[in-house]
Length: 194
Image 1 (spheres, rainbow, N blue to C red):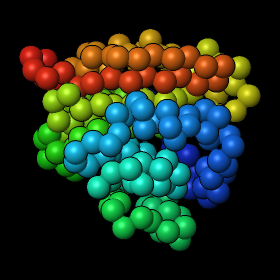
Image 2: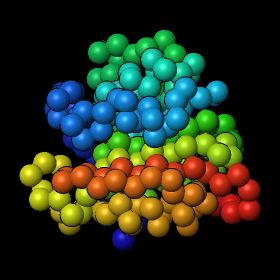
Image 3: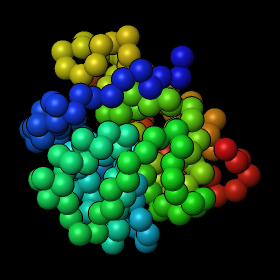
Image 4: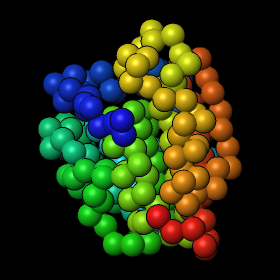
């Protein structure tokens, strides 16, 4: 199964603002390092939710895009205050409404398990420039399940890395933590096409 079984309930959006818990799983500095910020061009977050990480990224780039399938998540982010260099787009990760090679870097934070992975990663590969970075941080199938989705809905870093390679990425970093994983990849500069 390729996924996309559910989305995080928008009525629980305030839970996504717990900075201590979120940064324990992925710090702003680690995300910036994985994306190789700053970059020339726009950075895309697929599954931007409340904009928790988008705020950190927007402070380091000229322009950012926050894509989420739930308009209610964008509404929550607007109430909180969206930086002026961020554009919010409602849409599916499986059909990104952006031109080919129009994004300098992209990331998914704790949404990989929610997406139709093959389609979403293929779409990210399509919109990324050659050499552009993709960071995937998500709940690990090897975790205990104390937080996040049920273990049956999770994947391993190896699963994610293989999906990225199939879509035309070169994996440059993998890390596994007690409940999460991090995979950093670059869009191949030539040859493999999604």
